[in-house]
Amino acid sequence: MRAYPITLGPLQENACLVETPEGPVLIDPGDEPEKLFRLFRETGLTPKAILLTHAHFDHVGAVAPLVEALDLPVYLHPLDLPLYQGADLAARAWGFAIPKPPLPVEPLEEGMTLFGFQVLHLPGHSPGHVAFYDPEGGQVFSGDLLFRGSIGRYDLPGADPKALFASLKRLLSLPPNTRVHPGHGPGTTLGLEARTNPFLTGLEWET
Image (cartoon, helix red, strand yellow):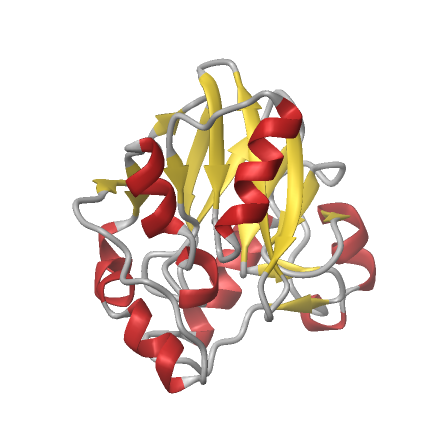
């Protein structure tokens, strides 16, 4: 799968247009829909669906205009539906503005295969946080679970530090050379993070 990452909005969220065997999909369109439409034109790829790792406002801010323009289905884990429905209010509380994300959404669940991705339910940053794993391509779209040199916040409403570290340990059980496309910041690999990320010290690394 070929990935076309793009950084969006004031919180510098990473969205990604991914060319999958079943057609293009867009992961976590957080803001600036005009930039996304430009990316579609430049690549010649129009997404067939929106896949959300989680429903914090900085990851869903462009969902409404994209659905309105392209009539796309939106996939989200049901445990994050309350965050999704309140994302516009959460943005306002932080001093930002996004259009209210539209319903309905299609449910994601642990173990399902979607557009060639394995869906991994990895809660902690939010209750319904997932990652999209491409085993053939050796890459994972980790949302806000793991960053280069850091990890996702676990002090937000609905977060759970114990669950987050269990999810990190599970993520690290994937092959070390797996490329990580995080929700913020530069890309990395699981092996690099296992060796150098200070937040992962003491987590069991499985090969």
